[in-house]
Length: 254
Ligand SMILES: NC(=O)c1ccc[n+]([C@@H]2O[C@H](COP(=O)([O-])OP(=O)(O)OC[C@H]3O[C@@H](n4cnc5c(N)ncnc54)[C@H](OP(=O)(O)O)[C@@H]3O)[C@@H](O)[C@H]2O)c1
Image 1 (cartoon, protein in one colour):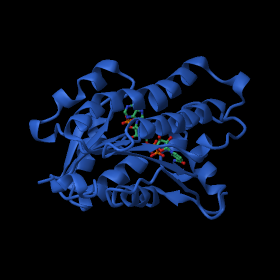
Image 2 (image 1 turned 45 degrees about the vertical axis):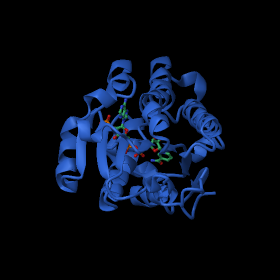
Image 3 (image 1 turned 180 degrees about the horizontal axis):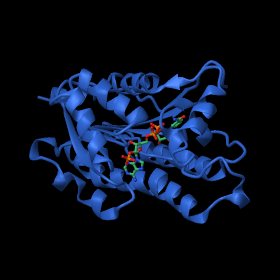
Image 4 (image 1 turned 90 degrees about the horizontal axis):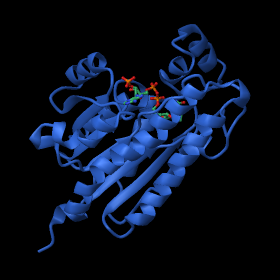
């Protein structure tokens, strides 16, 4: 008899979920939403103090886990570093990302910052996926959700490197979906417009006032909880349905 868990949607109570970049913003909201759905959530990022506080708030369903997606050692051995009961990851949310030093015309940019954006948003996402996907293949099921952006559909002035990174997320996600088509490993991309998180503060080197002014310049903005709802929607589809791309913008954006 077929294992009926194969036919059940990926989002089921007890499913193990790894969320990268879970110490703030969208990742934190996704961790919270999935724990509320009964998943066992591995909340991963570099900032352990914040992760521990989040895990404490969410409760025993959430495990704080130190992970720097730009560090090959940190990512390659990630499954081995997890507690035994959390090693079989059913759902991977590739969310860690930033645009440090962004919103600058290309020739005014800083090469080290470009490299870090690319290392985090592209190479890091690929590394984490490489570490997790073999056991999904072995078990014949899994769901990978990558955080793209509307910047991966159309660039804007001052965003050449960030847009390049998010175009790459779109290409990688599309390639993964093609590789695992028909295998019960589903691959989705969520492409948000502007979301009020700590993203602008990181981009603007911790200048909180400038970050607030940036967000306040929008008539409407998305919240991290809006994106968490989109992730849950993608994960809750029946087993034969793949949300390939979900583009979501606030009413003042297009
Ligand atoms: N906010 C928006 O308007 C928006 C729109 C579209 C798409 N997105 C995408 O959504 C994702 C989340 O962004 P956000 O808005 O939630 O930003 P955020 O509030 O700044 O959170 C970013 C998260 O990424 C983590 N992170 C950064 N570098 C990392 C690394 N090397 N290894 C592991 N974790 C790392 C940070 O944690 P630590 O610093 O503790 O590691 C933090 O938890 C990003 O991929 C972003 O590109 C955001």
